[in-house]
Length: 171
Image (cartoon, rainbow, N blue to C red):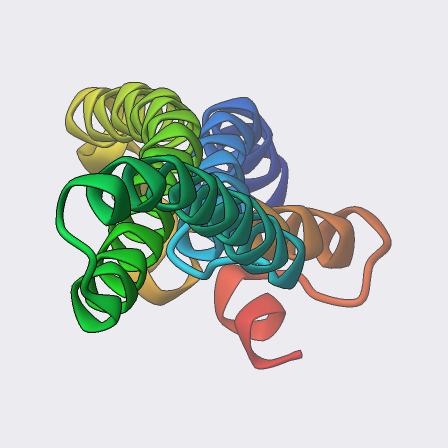
């Protein structure tokens, strides 16, 4: 194969390699926020804690009303105190879990959208490799079958730094 034929063959493969690299880049860029969704941000923890405390206060208010009624019927101090703690803990847990469900729902929607995005690009990448893989490897060795490498090899041949594929690969 002459130098010009080699350059033409590489030049013909560069757009396909560029599409393949674009798919890889999209998959990598979508994976970073997907991994970040697993970590709970400090502001969300603070909101869950704060709103959970409001639930605890609501439990305290309810217990105060219930205790007043119970104290009229059964005048015992310990029962009211125990009931107050139970209602405070119940209120905190109930509100805290509802706030957590709200934020988890939003995260799950984002996660599903990112996973679908990644899946689409993985399918496109697989299609490109199946369709053009052998054609690309007819000219470029497997370790150099990347957009960046093909551009560099083409540049070496075009600028006269190399006269063959072997020379271009050694630069």
